[in-house]
Length: 243
Image 1 (tube, rainbow, N blue to C red):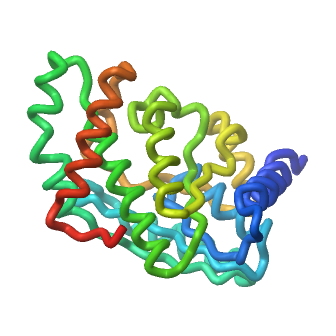
Image 2: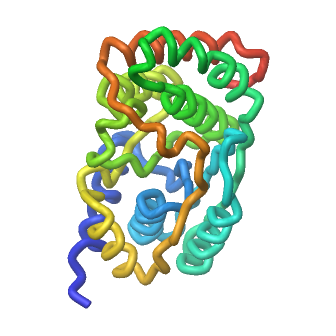
């Protein structure tokens, strides 16, 4: 097979992790992991780039997901593929936080914009990142990664307005947050070939959220106040995230 994507991914992860950690990378990282193609590609590239490292595959269970066993199977597969890396699979359950911060606000979230868009995925993504920061902080890990790709930037929870606040949140916690394959995961065909080049069995499916097909476009002036309000709700929540 003509290798063209996997090597680029390994080089990109190596360069971007190193560049983001100017004081030196200690080999420990957390990856927000769904078991789908994009996060699996990041996991494989990281393991190839940093043999002897420690990678925590962190699944955030918001209480709205099904097929979680698929994620565990993909994590187990990665462990077997890269025995030179200490791969840890962890599930952090945040269903109570999701109820308090997201679901109890969903009617207002929807109606106050004239039924034009639904931003519950922004609340979910915020909770995921707050949880990842908490997990990393408890373990003394300074690097958090995800599989966010450029092709997803129209999703409300992946827009630049949203991601700017996420990056600032991590900076405020003295943590580094990167999406190391952002510009390489251009479409599913490319990602599939990349995974094949790594020798990876292509995941058939990742966990499915009940809101998975509710994507609608949103304007910055809708996203920004929603995100700021949700951050305050998270901070006031009775569910401690230790961050």
